Amino acid sequence: MTHYLNQTRKQAAAALQEFLDEREPALDRLRTSIQTDGQNPDVLLDGTVESLVPLWQWILPRLTGPEAPGVTAPASVPREEWPSWERYTEEDEQVLSLESLHLLDGLVSYLAAVVQHGAPSARWDTARHRVKRYAFNNHPVLVSENTDSHIFLPSVPAGDARAVLLGMRESPENRIAQYAGAVIDDLGRGAEGSDQPSANEEPLVEVEDLGDDPRRGRELEVSVREDIAHKHSHTVDALAKDLKGQDGITDVIREDREVLLVATPTWTATRLEEWATDYLATKLT
Image 1: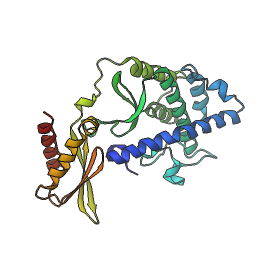
Image 2: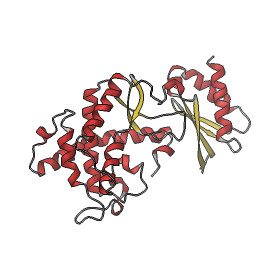
Image 3: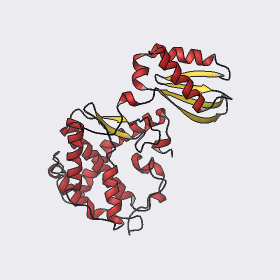
Image 4: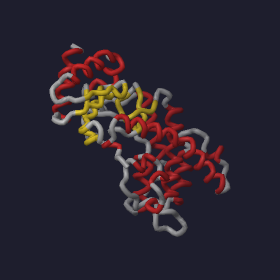
């Protein structure tokens, strides 16, 4: 398990796709649970923000801890059975049962559908920030051209679920509906005064140390800002070519449009990031 915050761009892109692939099965599982309980999922899940009130009301009493009778402790099953948003954020799970995680996973899918219906401009992306330890870096988030916000949808449902089970606080029945309304308002109309980054505030490049490769030796991964890699692909090609000619650089591979893999026995991630940033800043001015 690699926490979102420690993932490379390639890993984060794969994690985003994994998250998206889980949405429909998770929603189907939620619908089945509702139907098994004797309710009509088409009525309860009517696609409106208001429907999140009875849905959260239905979920709350069904939340269980891993020690409750008849439930599955997450630690007792392979981590691949956890929702990916849980697997890439938690080392272990001591508050929620696997069944509760699956309920919340279904809620996240339905919540996403409600939000995207209310804010048609919203789309899924990987959060990136100039601050490497930004709380939602590399997380699968909803974004919009109208705002700089990054919305990691599982955060509020999972946080409230844990707080309820721990007896820390109650979660009002309209909690998720209010959350959805706020997210729709943010993504749909924009939010003034947001302290989230815009694309142009991201650094030109970021470098991560991938450690030693058995064949290539020490590897560093250079991630070029997405808009630069897209609009100035030839400049990234030139960067790779010129970098390969530097002393101490043994190989450079352009693995993806925005990713270079650099083999070097002597350069540090900081040195490479400074060199690549200076190179692009000079070429693009």
